[in-house]
Image: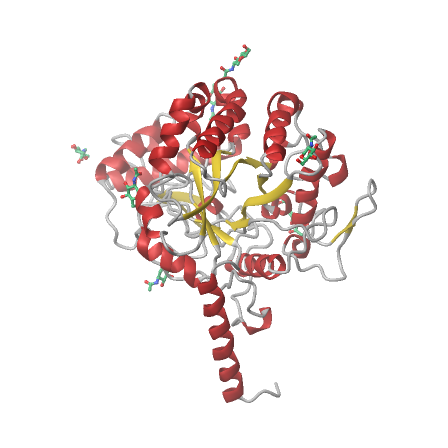
Length: 475
Ligand SMILES: *[C@@H]1O[C@H](CO)[C@@H](O)[C@H](O)[C@H]1NC(C)=O
Ligand SMILES: *[C@@H]1O[C@H](CO)[C@@H](O)[C@H](O)[C@H]1NC(C)=O
Ligand SMILES: *[C@@H]1O[C@H](CO)[C@@H](O)[C@H](O)[C@H]1NC(C)=O
Ligand SMILES: *[C@@H]1O[C@H](CO)[C@@H](O)[C@H](O)[C@H]1NC(C)=O
Ligand SMILES: *[C@@H]1O[C@H](CO)[C@@H](O)[C@H](O)[C@H]1NC(C)=O
Ligand SMILES: *[C@@H]1O[C@H](CO)[C@@H](O)[C@H](O)[C@H]1NC(C)=O
Ligand SMILES: *[C@@H]1O[C@H](CO)[C@@H](O)[C@H](O)[C@H]1NC(C)=O
């Protein structure tokens, strides 16, 4: 390097100064999802400091929590709030109910808190258990909320909803994008009226789009660099239907939504990204969830979006974008990646440095740890009671989880019965470890995870002792 250490340090200080300036002006910088499915994260005031530190220009929450909305007052940050899924039929059935929701959850904080989007439900069309009760009620609820806002002369709040990629027939990997269309069960009944509403109110179709899942499920077809915006002149994809050239996975996903909207006659509806991101960790059998990839994805995303590139089908289109998520959230069920989307650990320490304004040059970040799990882990894995570094696990919670595990599968807890090989040590903790593993080894093929409300964790160290054998993924 030709730059002297002192000059280098000076440059970094100048860059840090720019960073703060951008953070303050707050109109720059992509947004962040402030998810709170955790029991150990900092309170709202500290969280808002962390959101500003990372350079976010907007924040999205999954409810309309009053403490959160109050601490966002006066920050100039654009805020997206959400109507919970389960009250949507009620808001659709009654204009008065919708008006009351607005009166209680928006009016007290607005405009000091700069609410910009009111999202009616989260990924509703992915939840088939509410298909009959709720899907056809989404747009009527949006209309009632819209009327309430108009009556109250609140014109700067856009109403929408968030949809996962599974609203498309081809799911999360719609290739070629130009062939994408909405699922037949929702296209006419739900999506068409939704698009009519969004078009008529100049609002956005908000999509949750995760190149991570596409790559993890199709690693033979989708190169990692392509998913991470790193393909350069290397991997590209040309859509045979349009001739458009793609340099990254996210653009393909977005243009698939654009193509599907156009097929219903609404090719002009604006697009927003309600969630995207990359996990910084995960289970042993999951690939690519690590700090290295997560940092690269989110830094590249921020740098890219700062230039408003749009997509190949819509060059230059401005898009609101929200990264998922502010914190690693310990109470999210499912595989390990679900609890590892954060820019911050629950203790408020950054998982890796990132500037969501996109102004910081990529070369100026310190080196990242190497990615260690981009390929599948081949050794044996067990599932045991988590060692939470001295944190005390409640005996009742562990006992409940133990009872649950023993009730699943066949002979799951035989070996921990009195007189059997794993009875000793006769403690709830030792029995829970055995039962979690026995349950998981039997049922993981059908989607069971090593979670147990965050009481369990995977290990590559054989927990067997004496004549008590813990089975592993390798038999
Ligand atoms: C809002 O958030 C605060 C802080 O996390 C929490 O204490 C409170 O219970 C929440 N309110 C509701 C209604 O969920
Ligand atoms: C929804 O309604 C259909 C047709 O009436 C019925 O077959 C189906 O079981 C219902 N689904 C649920 C989840 O209630
Ligand atoms: C969408 O909105 C635009 C602008 O208001 C309008 O010109 C167009 O006709 C609308 N499209 C449809 C399909 O209704
Ligand atoms: C915060 O948590 C992370 C992950 O558990 C840990 O690596 C880090 O050292 C913690 N930081 C502090 C200041 O305790
Ligand atoms: C892709 O995934 C398969 C199945 O998980 C694995 O066997 C293979 O090694 C992976 N390939 C790469 C390049 O990571
Ligand atoms: C338990 O045994 C029954 C009957 O033999 C079988 O159908 C079922 O698949 C078994 N369950 C598991 C988890 O192995
Ligand atoms: C095993 O532990 C339970 C709970 O502490 C106790 O009630 C029981 O008597 C113990 N059994 C033996 C055989 O030690």
